[in-house]
Image 1 (cartoon, rainbow, N blue to C red):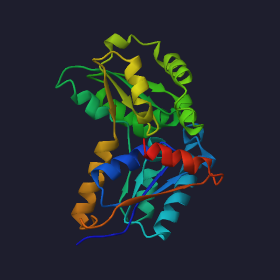
Image 2 (cartoon, rainbow, N blue to C red):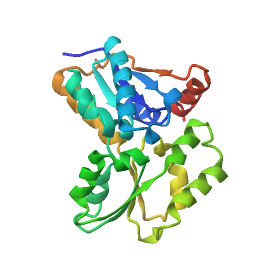
Image 3 (cartoon, rainbow, N blue to C red):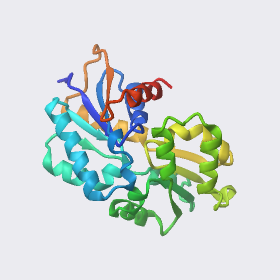
Image 4 (tube, helix red, strand yellow):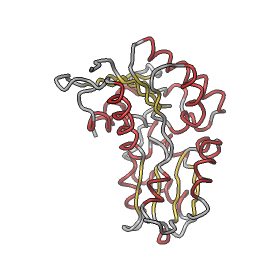
Length: 258
């Protein structure tokens, strides 16, 4: 069996485009419907209740469009809403969490020193605290909120090198970076800053995000259900945004094509 139905992907704004890019690369025959909620961004500074309400509205929109699965391309929305969404809908709903386990696994059993860069809400939600508790006995983990990076991307300031580097130094100069084994990019906005992180960090420090693992999980689920797109399907990505000014749509397209 196969399915030509689309995969719905949403984020608080533009960051989820990094997941759409991974989907387009790894599952090129799939149609992806993306919804960025830039009119309500950033989610990382909202209450969990507000994030849940917004997430339910978006998933209901996707269900009405007939999607076969939903990817919550937002660590914050995953933390706040994924369990309730799975209870409410009978299609696969795939969430994201900071890729802490892959970072720990890089040590092949040796203790690691890891910074998890994410939004304030992601780091304070019980879901992340449970994840961190699984690994903190053996590894040293530093949760680091980086809300300004989200806003830089949302404001179309990704190319402002001085602004980005000042922001990174504000967050990371407190650490002895030579002693850090990896930095987890625990927000889907952050892979767009990879080159800047690479400039900031020592060469030995690994940069890890969860996009590839999430897309692989989507593939496994759809394959098990017989709902992967046929290999002769011409995949595409349709991009939508709650900010109807047109500015965000142009930013989404430019990020998808980077």
